[in-house]
Length: 435
Ligand code: FA5
Ligand code: MG
Image 1 (cartoon, rainbow, N blue to C red):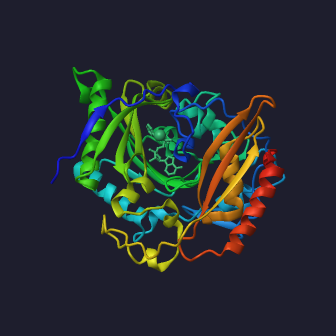
Image 2: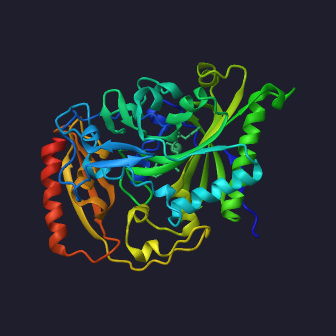
Image 3: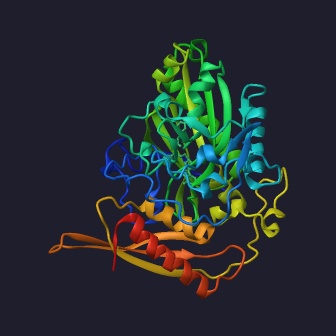
C-alpha cells in the first residue's frame, strides 16, 4: 500500500470575520459558503424577490422526518419576506438519502458507524432522523456564531422565518444533545445552504457531526486541550485510513466560531485539493453553557457527499439525487468503494450571460435563479470575465452557465428556452442591466 500522506500543514490561515482572508471568488468553488470565511462584503438582496422562479418539479404537500410531518406551507411562504425557501429545496426534505442502505451516502454512513463501533465499542450514540428545521439559536447562537457572520445572511442560509432556519450544519444539534446528557454522539442529516453551482456544491448535502466529551480523569496531568486535539486527529486519521487506505491528504489550520484550535482535512481529488471535513477542540463556553463545566471536548463535521465522491468515483454531486436505476443499481449495502461506472456522458451546453452588476448583486442569488429555472440541468456557473468601466463607474460580470443532463441529451431548443428565462429573471430579480 502506498504511504498515505497525512501531514499537518498550514496552507492559508483563515481569520474569521476578515473577508480578505478568503480566496477571491475567481472560480465557482471559491464561492462556497462556510464557517471559517467571513465574507462580510457580501450583501443580501432584499428578501422575497430574488428567488423561486419556476420550480422544476411540483413539490409534495408534506414531508416526514423521524415520524414528524412537515407541511410545505410551514416551510415555503412566498408572501413572507422573512422566508426564502424555494420549492426545489423543500422537495429535498424527508428524502433521507443517508438512511438508504443501498445508496452511496447510506453505505458510507454505515461504514463510519462501523469504524466507531469497532474502535470505541458502545461509546457513540447515533442520531440520523433529527428534523432539519431548527431555531436560529440552535443553528447559530448556541455554537457562538457572531451576530455579523456572513453565514447568518439571507444570502447564505435558508430561513423559514426570522427565528427558524433549515439547518446549515449538523453542529446545530451540539447544544441540545449536550443538554440531553449525551457525551459521545454522531448526528447525521441533510443540511441546507444557498451556494455556488458546480460539481462539488449543491444547496442540500449531508453532514455527520461527531462529538466526544472528556472528563478530567481522562487527560490527567496533560493539557486538556492538547489531549483532545491529539485524540481528535488520531480518531479522524484512523477513520480516513479505514475509508481510503491510500489517498493523498493534508491537515489545514482554519477557524470556526465553535472550536479552538480548528482544522480541516483535505483530500486530493480530480487534480485538486478538496475539503472534506472541519473539526477542532470545542470552545469551553459551549460546554459550560450546556451543563458540562470542567470537561473538554472535540467535534467534527464531515461532508458525506465529498467523501462519497472520492470513495465511489462519483464525478458530480447531482448524481446522489437521481432515481435513474443506471446509478442506483450500482451500489449495494456494505460495498464501500465500489467504483461508479459512468453510464453516459452527455455533452454540456454552455451559455454566457453578461450584465452590469448592482450593489446588491451576489453570486448565490444568481445561482438560485439559475437553479430555480434549470434545476439539476445546471451543472456549473462560473465567472469568466469581470471589468470596471472607470468612466461609468460600473462593473460588468460575464458568467458561463454549463447545462448538462446526467440522463439524456439536451436539445438546443430547450436550452435556449431556459437561457431566455434566465436572462429575464436575472434582470428582473437581481436588478442588474443585461449587456
Ligand atoms: C461546518 O459546517 C462546521 N459545522 C464543521 C465543524 C463541526 C467544524 C464541528 C468544527 C467542529 P464547513 O462549512 O466547512 O464547516 O462544512 C463542513 C464540510 O461540509 C466541508 O468540509 C465539506 O465537506 C462539506 N460541505 C460544505 N459545503 C458544501 C456544499 N455546498 N456541498 C457539499 N458539501 C459541502
Ligand atoms: Mg469548510
